[in-house]
Length: 610
Ligand code: M6R
Image 1 (cartoon, helix red, strand yellow):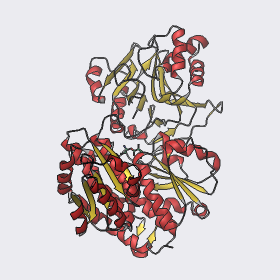
Image 2 (image 1 turned 180 degrees about the vertical axis):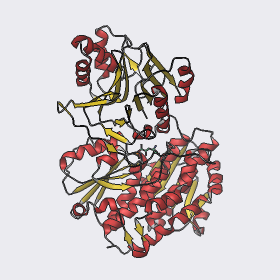
Image 3 (image 1 turned 90 degrees about the horizontal axis):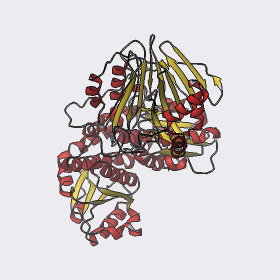
């Protein structure tokens, strides 16, 4: 999704900004742009649809001697992905330039006020009102700083902003509200980015901006005022202790296939130093530090979006079954607006691969006043959610670049098993069996991957259907939801996930010979026979059926049209094997359709707006 990079110092700023924008590319965007002042203090504004590298030929046509630049990658929210709508945006005099992440909710109102004042708009974006509004107040108050503050006070919504103006060609203004922004500190130079990964190769010394901070950044000085607290803020820099996460394709045609095939390693990495199988111990350092609070919890609310939400649903079954603690899983986008009782004895657990999902961050912000423990299950080290939570567990799955999340789900579910075991304190009859099972899980995951050719054969047989129903029970119900999401995301085929027991309450009406069902019917489910009855109900109505079954189950092969066999495994670990299989199934259909698998249409990797 949108990304911001800025630089001021003694190096060629446009090149640094360009590199930074490239580091953010995998997050998904549809256009890019940057602006700098040339040696005569004239602005060079360059923007283009498509890849960041499309800016290069335009940059080659101008004098690149510049020591201050701001740039942006845009993921369209208001207005089509066109070069006019791309950032930076500017005022009518082209003296103020702004890049913006987030959404200005009252932009229509502001646009109409400014239009009445004679301003002309060139884009369909919400963001363009910002430079116009700053211009309006600047002219009125005759002081840029005051004009900017007045403009910010009028904005409703969320933003991370980098702003430059031709009167102060040696200054970048930066501010944020519910959207991340970090300043990188160098030797007589400063960087700015919406994600530290964009600047990590230059500096690890950073200052994270807080809501309502307004930073005035020059080569060798930073001043931060908090506009809400109405005072200058003490600047506290911190040293990031991780490197830029790099991921190369190797021999894979795309990142999604690579990331699916990383499943065995992902499971191992999630367990390193945490699963001490021979001692029957699960050690989660991140949770140990809040043990005293964990001893008094009576409820866990898990929040997340998309795939992370589905992982949370597996977690609900797990924690309730193993640790006997009531769990509720909520979509972060719903949770943040719900009015519900919430007490100090409830723990909130936010699950997120990117650690930057706006809805999940807002869910955490919502509980700020309740004094409850905030935990995170996050993949991206140092991300906003990792910093907003009191404690947590990192996935350590490495960078996930494909928009469709695959290895993150595998990692999240593996860690949720560890969390459930940890919270159970060993008081569960399945405790040791599950620990032993996790030790074998990478081998079983590899066994699923070894069947890729067979999964592909089945996928190709079904690639032209327009609709799919995915069904499962227990741990495999969230897997059915996740499998359907994968199919939708990368093949654009309509798919719905359902609890198998629910189909007779409505979805059965859809079934005919043109509407196939993918049924997860594995031996580990105590309700296998009931799922088989559901399969029979579909069969009777002429619906084609693919079953995910446990190796050796001959009975299912006689009922359904196609079977994909999975290794036998215990309940929650079985869900991981099913998920890998469903990821491959969706992948091979998308491949056969010749689609852009890593960057499906309309989607972004990191969803930083509501
Ligand atoms: O980074 P997060 O895990 O917070 O992202 C949540 C969702 O946006 C994400 O899982 C999305 O649904 C993926 N595209 C699913 O493949």
